[in-house]
Image 1 (tube, helix red, strand yellow):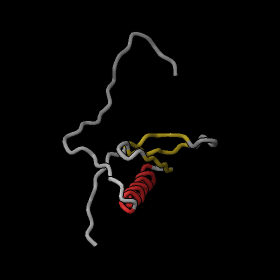
Image 2 (cartoon, one colour):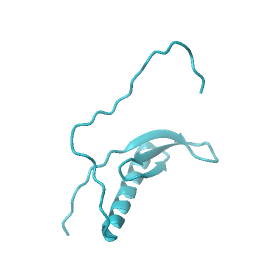
Image 3 (cartoon, helix red, strand yellow):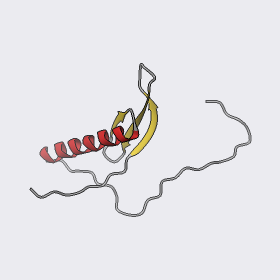
Image 4 (cartoon, one colour):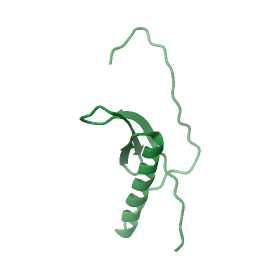
Amino acid sequence: MEKKVLNYRIVIVPDERTGTNKPCYTAYVPVLGIATDGDTIEEVLGNVKDAIRIFVTSLIEDGENVPLEPVGEELITTASVEIPQTISN
């Protein structure tokens, strides 16, 4: 069976489990609209790769289009900005 490699942008953020407030990580795949979690970054990365594989495979089996990431350069960063006063969360 011929295989193809697809690349997807994954956003991993620190999170808390609902109900227990235990720290964890949540991973999102924006173009596919899927998310999963894990106790560590390594675990959540493995979980999200499995979720991508399952989701894309089910789309193929159902004859649906598989969303692909746009090809091109992308920059993801953070920015620190000064504000005139303190804010509370």
